[in-house]
Length: 238
Image (cartoon, rainbow, N blue to C red):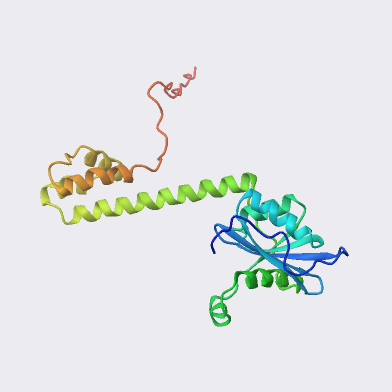
C-alpha cells in the first residue's frame, strides 16, 4: 500500500455525539498501518491509513479517540511491523491484544483488503477470538533479543565460512591440502591468512574466507602483562 501525505481525520460516516466505548483494529505493514474502528455493538465507524512513524501513531490514536472511549486495540504483527505501535499504545493506556493474520488462502478467495483486515482485527477482539497479550518488546528484553539475534547471525555466518573453507580444501592441490588438513580451526585461520592471494584463485578464496571464519569472537586470552598464577607452596612437616 502506498503511503499518502495527508490522512482524513474522520470517516465518511457521521460520528455520533454520544461517547461510548470503541475498539481499534490495525493491519500493520512496513510503511503504512491501516486502522479501523468499530463500536461495542459491532458497527463500523471508519477506517483510515496512517504512516508507520511516531507522528503517524499519534494521528492514529487521536483519530480513533475522536469516535469514543478507546480501551482495547487488536494489532497484527506485534512482534514485527506492529511492535513499535504496540509499545506506543500501551504507553497511552490502551490495552493491546495480539491478533493473528488472516489465512492467506481465505484472503485470496475473498479479495485482499487492508481495511477489511483491520476491521477483522477489531472484531476478533470484540468477539473474544483474540485474547493473547503481546510479548514485551521494550527495555532489557528488547536489548537481549537484539543482542541474541546479532550473535546468532554471526555464528551462522562463521560456520558457513568454515564449511566453505574446508570444502575448498577437499578439491585443492594435494600439497596445499596436506599442509592444512591436520590443523585445528584457529591454526587453519592463521595459515590461510599467510597465504599469498596472488598465487591462485584457491589461495585468494582461502585467504579471504579466513577473515569471515575468525570474525566471531572467541574465548578471551590472558594478556602477557597479567600476573602469573601463584604457585602452591607446602611447609615441610617437622
